[in-house]
Amino acid sequence: MLLLDEPLGALDKQLREQMQPELRLLQQKPGIALVLVTHDQQEALTLADRIAVMSDGAVMQVDNPTGLYEQPRTRRVASFIGNMNFFPATLHRHGAAQIDVQGLGRMALNGDDDGRPDGSAALIAIRPENLAVHRDAPPTGSGVPGVVHARQYLGGRQMLHIGIAGLGTAVAVAAPGGPDDPASHLTIGQSVWLNWKHDAMLLLDCD
Image (tube, rainbow, N blue to C red):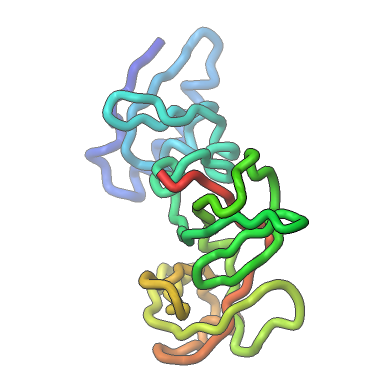
């Protein structure tokens, strides 16, 4: 077993990315097991077969990279792995289970509610890449009006920050950065519509 403690931490970004496949090849050799400690979430997702997220010496979740990214169990894990938007919510059980999501409105609850009682507080999480921005109200799906507060150009993509009534924090939306994408032509202060798919929402505990 080989223990690696931040082995690429002193390298610049390009060299670090070039070394990751080399470590992956070493890991796949028979008879070698790697335990790699890193604060770089992307590095962990790229190199690991299984990831343990730890805080204050306690393991919060152990899973493969896909499960950890797409199905985090708590807010701390969800916020540590990648970018995430969080929305306070309240569960309602009048007939079919529904949930009131602050800023987004009431909607049918997608997935298991873990037997939560009516009126219980919860937290909805949505990844920025599972949100979309349109100039006009979308013909299908769910949507709410908003205003472009800021934008970050990140090379091949961009991050938009959309202000929504009832929310104190702007919602992050990942969008392509190319000139053919409509989001590339949005301006600060422009009115837009934010929409999402119901299966994009994760139901988390409040703590």
